[in-house]
Structure formats: structure tokens, C-alpha cells
Image 1 (tube, rainbow, N blue to C red):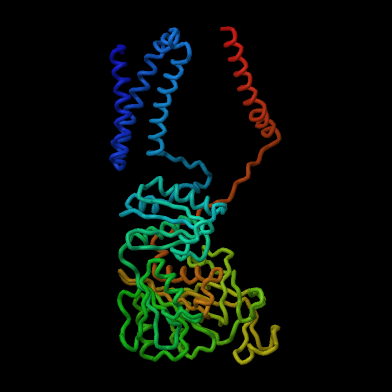
Image 2: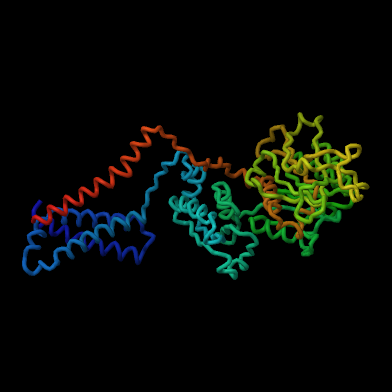
Length: 510
């Protein structure tokens, strides 16, 4: 290759490098054009450097350049090439996952979602700068950003910026808020399934509707007192749901857009006509959440029995309770194996004044029973008239020994017709756990939100098996351990030390 041609390539490389910078400033979204221009610039400059290396060496022997002008020129040229390569690497990074369980590789469902993400999403993570959860969020979101440029992230320490945390209504740490358009939702754990499902919810303009029945002295959605459900309404709306009240006395029907129907703590009788509407709703693929307290006069026994559920009218007493709490406030950390509870782990959920839930075996051929929450083995069930007596110990003549089921789900065995959902009813033997007074306790919020999400089929949008994050153990024999020590501690450092000494001696002889 002639010197003239290579010289022209060097000039062209410089021009292309400058042009790439200009395009990046004026039109940063033209990533393909920028990458092409900067790649050509790097190639041209590399050819020029390799071809004229000897010329640069000769140039360095001139008197005017003996003071290091050639070194400056070489450094500038090499810096320019490395800068271009670094720019290309930052804009078009490539990631390899060499972990044994591929824990840093996103599921195919997530990768497809990110490629087809319809619009930009802002993620604001509220976590302490020193929290290990911050690193977990950082690693997870980095994996997502490697697949899309539409994901923007900001980390906020609530202690350093309490105003921003109040603006978003953050009540618990390690919460990530996702915003896109007019939609907003949030997650409380750095898991791929949680984040992917949140992206699905926040990028959909159609919201699912949750109806709360009224007319039977239930908890009121708009009530801001301790007994109200206003905090629950806000939490559901932050998750992207439309939350409304529904009176069957007035409507005489259940809206077709009802994703979930909630009967939140009825104290007065539910009329037979209303119960027939509920039965018909569930039969046609409806999802019903019933929160039923001890002593309730809702008269739902026969309707619940049709679904195989039975709410024991006794009260659960448990010595596993909060510090200073009453025996009637059992704290649960034993959950059944189900998608609703799989992420709760050792989080505690408190059910103040709860009743046991059982399943009728005669309905086993129609419904699949899933226990969701159980009291501790130190609990027992006591009849209503005796629960407030001074006898605080288990009475084998009157009481039933725990653990006792406090929340359970039944799902119909029959295959639904086309475009119909699988009928499901979730019964919790307490309604106060979701009230304003107790919603913020440990896992109460997570439990009710996970229950509604599963019933609304939000969790079913993407089901991703959790990655195995356990660290493997490397077992070595004595010979392997000695060889590894010789190579890492003695061999490699000794090689570089000897190489450096040899080069130093050769340069002194010049």
C-alpha cells in the first residue's frame, strides 16, 4: 500500500472521528450511523499507525523531536483510537454470562418484552446507598438496559432525599417505582419476575378493575380511619388497578370488566339474590376474594360450601405474636407452596382476630385446595364465647391444636371454555389485616397485593423460574491446591518480575 494512500487514510480517519462526534451531539438516536462512522475511523487510523510506524521512529531521531514530541504524537494517536473503541464499546456493549446457573441471563420472555417495549419507562429505586439491595437492583436493571434503550433508572436514598420519597408516597425501603405515560406501578423486590411483570403493567393503557362490594357493613374504600381500606385502595391504584365500589342492591349485576371481586369483611347478611350473583360470577370464570372475620353475620356458609370452603367460627389464638400483642393477633411466617406466596419467604403477616379455614373433602373432585397461610404449631382455635376468658392456655377438651389454616385458595378442576378464566375463590379468615391500622405491618401489604395480582392474572402474564443464586464450592485435592498456589502466587508474579528486570537491563545497554 503506497504511503500516499495510507496518509490519506490517516486524514480520513481523523475526519471520520470528528464527524462521529458531531453526529452523536446532534442526533444521538442514530446509533447505527454513529457506530459505522466511528468504526471506519478506528480502522483508518489503525492502518495509518501500523504503516507509518517506522516513519514515526525516524522522525523521533530529529533534533526537534528528541525532547519527546514523538511520544506525545504516539500517545495522542493511540488515545484517539482507544477513545473510539471505548465509545463503541459503551454504546454497543456485549455481555457474556459464565455463571454455572446463568443467573445473569434474562429469560426469553423478558428479552422478547424488552425488544418490543412500546415506550420509554422510568425506574426510580428508593434504597439506601449502603444497602445490598441497591446492588441487586443495579445488576438486574443493567441486564435489562443491555436489551433496550427505553429503560431509564435513577437511584434515590430516602434518607438523603426525604422530599422525593414523600412525593412518591414511599413507606418502605427498597421500593422501585416504574412510570410510563400516565401509568405507574411499583415493586418491592429485585427479582426478574417482579420487574418484568411491572413493565408489562406500566406499558399497558388498559387497566384491570377490582370491585369492592358494599352494603353489608364492609370496610369502606374511602374511609381514612383505622378501620378503613383507603390505604389498600391507594396501594392497588399504585399497582396500576382501577379500584371501585359496587353495590349489588343497586346494580343487580356484576360488571363484565370485573377482574377481581372483593368481599372485604361483611358484618351483615348477604342476601340470597346477591349470593346467587356471586355463584354465577365464579362459575363463569370469576375471581372472588372473601375476607371473613370471626362472628360475621354474612350468612355465607352454604355458598362457601359450594366451593368446598368452610370458615370455622372459632377464633385463632397464638403465642407467636408481636411483642406486647394479644393472643388473638397471630403472626404468620409459614406459607403454602403457591405463586401467591412464593416471594414472601420469611416475611411475617399478621392476622388480628382471625378464624380458621378448612376444606370439604367431598368437593375434592371439583376444586383444588391450596393452603396459603398457617398459624404456628403453638396456636389453637377457641370458640367465640371463650376466647376472651382469662384461660390463656390450650384446653384439649375445648380447643383445636394448631397449626391452623388462615387463608386458602380453591381453583376449579374443570377446564374452562375458550376465552374463559379458571374459576377461583380465595378465602381469608380475617379482614382487619388489610385495614389502614395493619396494612403496613411487615408482609400484610405484600400478601394482599400478591393475592389480588394472582386473581387478576397479573402474575400469570409472565412466570419466570427464580435463578439459583447459591454459591458453588470449589473442591481441590492437595496436588491441585499446591499447583494453583505455585501458579498464582509464585509463577505469574515471578514471570512479570523477571520480564521487567530483563527489559530494564536491555534498555540500559542501549
